[in-house]
Image 1 (cartoon, one colour):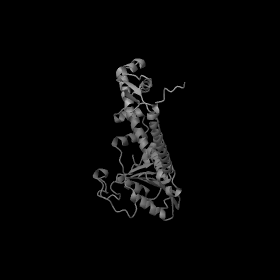
Image 2: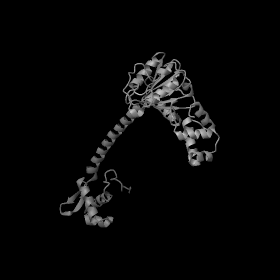
Image 3: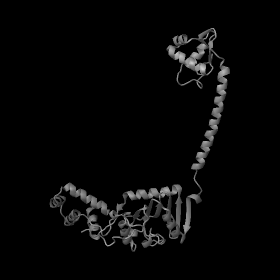
Image 4: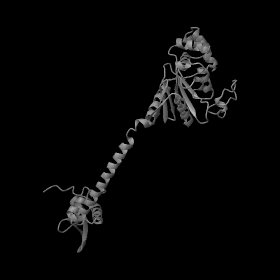
Length: 340
């Protein structure tokens, strides 16, 4: 005879695995009692009585009219067949729902048309779109700045003529001892800028003045030693990439995210820009002077009243600040930038 022990697998309650076995016992001509079922199945009377109760709720067993402690099985085709039909209907509806969800998921995730992801602007329209995107930014503008600025001159880069002067920055963001005290920031309140510049930009007329202005108003500027593409991203949502002197691509959606990732990766290894009028701590100036004089680490430490390890750690920090790989490069940078 076929093994039908799992005939109730789709209907059996997960609470108790005895239900099907108890139901089979109740199929005998005399039925079964809780005590009898417990004895034959190796379970307690309480567990057998609970199984009979669950079966009775589903109409699978009924009490014997002559002996209320004894239970008889109801014909399975009268009880289980309708349940099976209802289960098939639920499964059909679930399959239809699954098919609809799969279709919707892939439709929504499918790449949008090229026109929705990339907009090509040319000529004078480039400066217009740059101004529009910067004006629409609400949180942060990230940009690479390089040379050959044919769209917007350096003096006006990320500082459109239509931008009205904003409120004065808080005192802690200003050098209150400088001649620029009280000068209004051209930046909108709440909008931050993160800029990375390359050597080509630093060689542009007015570039250093522009960077000093940005750092004066508390914006973040970093420098790399290699050429950068011309990229700007606003709020990680919309980006600009200049691909030629007269052509710029406006990126939307995931492509703007790619541009933001490129910027973030570059930002992590770029070195901070130090304004030309920034002053080093007195100890750092003395350390650089001693290094340029050719003193050993031990001799410099003795002169400064510090340990050789402290001298080495501080020189490494200055090298990182200057973007130098060797102490010779650090010395050249210090001389060129007026640190000593």
